[in-house]
Every structure is written in C-alpha cells, then in structure tokens.
Length: 294
Image (cartoon, rainbow, N blue to C red):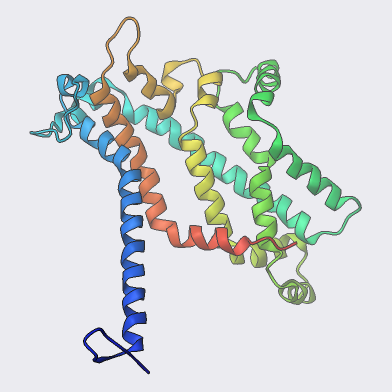
C-alpha cells in the first residue's frame, strides 16, 4: 500500500509509520536525557565543589567549573578528618545489620509462606500494619528501652534490632517464596529433608535475587542512617560517616568548610554507587519477581 505525496508521487505507507516510530523514540530519549541531567546535577555540584578552594566554594554567583581542580582537598580531608576510623565503624554496623536482616527476615518469611499454623494470616496482617507506624512515634520508647539495658553509646541499638526481622523485608521475601514451586520442597521432603534443610538448601539458593535486593536496600538505609547513630552514640570516635560529616558544616565556633564537606560526601557515596552498578540487574530482578502473589 502507498499514499500520494504533494507532488503526485507515491510513497509507501510503512515509511510514514517508521518515521513516526523514529521520531517517537527520539523524543523519548530526549526527555529521558533531560531528566537524567536534572537528577545528575546535584552530583555534579557535589563533585565540583569538592575540587574548589574555600573561597570559590563560598562565592556567589557560584563557580560552576573549578579551575584548576584542587585534588589537594582530599589529602587535606584525610589529614584533618579520621575518615578511615569512621569508615570502619560504618562498615562494621552495615555488615552486621545486613546479616541480621537477611537471616531473621528470611526465616520469618519462610514461615509465613510455607508453614501452616492457626492465626498465621492474622499475624502477618499485624506485621504489615506496623509499616504504617511513623518512625517518630517509636523513638522515645526505644531510647528508654535501650537506656534501661545500658546500651546507649554502644552499637547494640543499631545492630541488635536487625536480628528480629524487618517488616518490609519479610513481606518482600514472602512474596518471592510464594513463587517457588511446592514440588521442589515436596521432593526434598521425600528425600528426608526437614524444614530447616529445605529452607537452607532449596529455598535460599532460589531466592538469591530477592535476598540481594534486600541486602542493597539494607545497605543503603544503614550506610546513610544519620538519626540512629546521632541519638545513641555520644563518643566521637564511635561515630559513623553520616554523623561525622556534620562537623564539617561549621558551627558558631568554626566556619563552614563546604569544600571538605563535599569531598567527604563524595567519598561516602562511592561504595553506594559501586554496589548498585555491580548488582543492578539482580536488584531489579529481585524487586520485580516478588510481584503481588498471595
């Protein structure tokens, strides 16, 4: 089939459809590119400010491109700021929290998805209802509890709760476990495997994408957590990176050092970017496959 042009010649109809598809794709990529630039601008501003002098970082109108770039800011940051110590504290908390969340949440999710017991669904609904509780409501009761246990100014309030499950992680893993065929577990039971062995050797290996997604969520939340360490830690040598960065914001006794603050912030986000880029495919797969089954 063809359509007539203004000069009387015939043009295949598919050429018009193809042109519309090309223009549509070009417009889509243009909009996405503009959106990506908008979201990447804060990152550019952070990195560029980390390469400025103190005077350029305070100047208005701002200096958009620092020249020459001052990489000495990172050396000065390491000399004046115990980054390595705060990094060790943060990694220590993050690793234990990830282990606790994955272990406790996967066990609870396996119970909710496979074990039959009276009131199971009601308990699960109560668990989901806790997601609607504002975090601010729990701050004072939790602080009083941990103060009674003499855990304040230790890492225990930041780590121990992770070993008692996370409602969102339990929900996400339960939805994933429901997608695993029961035939695999039935075959394992025929071979003499109990619930624990089935959970460890059958369910967990198949749930690797969902576990990885939970690990990334937990890593990002714990790595960037500011409120928890600020409340429970008082000794400066125990601070995490998120809390320690506030000392570079200045106070009534010291001037703000935005160039060093941005340098420290740039160093702190490198692990987040690296882990996400390394595991983004598994992260997306684990989030999508969970679905809404159940």
